[in-house]
Length: 112
Image (cartoon, rainbow, N blue to C red; front, side, top):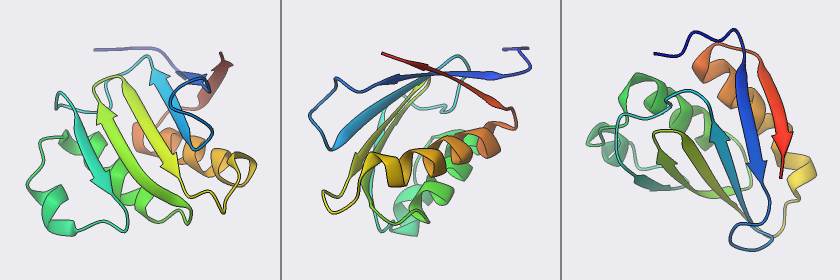
């Protein structure tokens, strides 16, 4: 279990093209190997997933952000696909705030 006071987030902008971002974190955010969710979210899919408490809250909160089309969640990684009508500048602070509130620790950003 991680005991750091902050959540280190490494943002990889090189993954999958301009509509994709990868957020690598130093704390477990999912209890499942990999789960993919399309937004708007079908609540039954989340109910049947094995993402755990933090992953469940993270997916619910990300679903409230307009412009996100799909999310993939791994134990230490979040992949986000945005709609091309939105910019990362419009979405990124909401995504980072959502990570921060789901884990309960302030985010420290490192960009690749």
